[in-house]
Image (cartoon, rainbow, N blue to C red; front, side):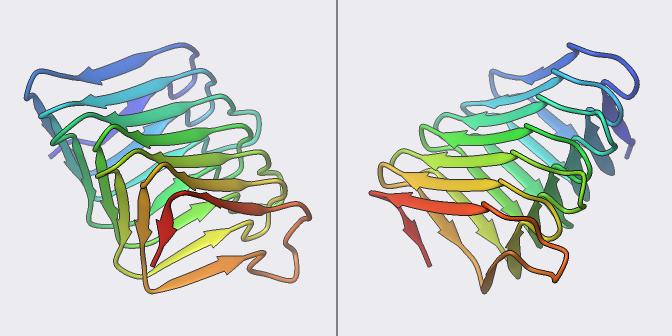
Length: 178
């Protein structure tokens, strides 16, 4: 088990898991302080880890995690945060990719804004054992579920705390949230 940081203090780093490859790790950070870092999980490949943060600290932005293709799986035993304190970080689940996590957050802290999750295409799912919070304290964070994609969860919060910013949004366009 290893801790994995992609772009801890640097920009434009990538980890690609392809062709049935696999990674087992403790925590994963994509853009701890850095920006424009990428994590790709493609068809037939798997990442299994405890938790992940995309855009962890102030100034970390434009980081991207993509899980795309049949049998692409990212399995987290803990939480998945898209924009802990960072801005414009993205998670894309497409073309039958699957993500499983305990909880999820978009825009966890007041400095966190414009973070997005897109779940699109038939067979693409984000399954949360517990809850998803959009705009816990951040603003203008956006979940889009489209084209027969699905988000499966127990609880959904939009603008979670009294410190939540404005303009957090959920768009369901031919997808489902159940």
